[in-house]
Image 1 (cartoon, helix red, strand yellow):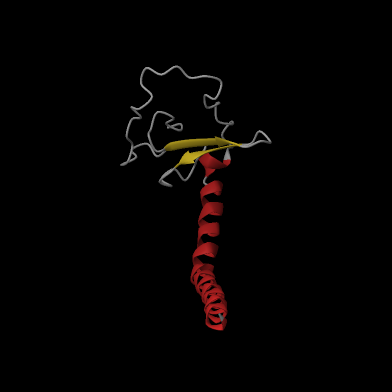
Image 2: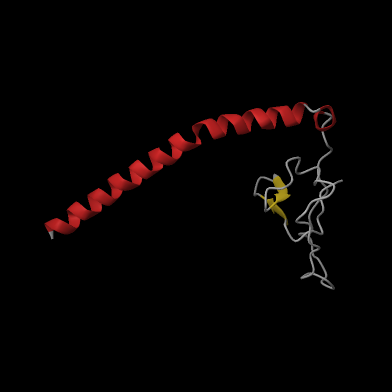
Length: 114
């Protein structure tokens, strides 16, 4: 199934350089911008724009889907990337928490001097 632009969870953003990002706000379309899952449990038809007239900002067509979507190699690459991110996620979170603690410590010292 192609991307459901009529779903309320579909979003599209075009940057100044002309690049467009298309996808699902809920992250349920791993093959975005080309496909939504056939039986997406969260599909909800967009109703807020019924009867509106769209100007020039109407979402353009998605680029042509690569063959790797059909042969499984794209899914393998995404799975590998997810494994890498999951492996380092706890380290990244702890580093962020440590850096927040250091910043808070500096603010507290400044307050004490006053």
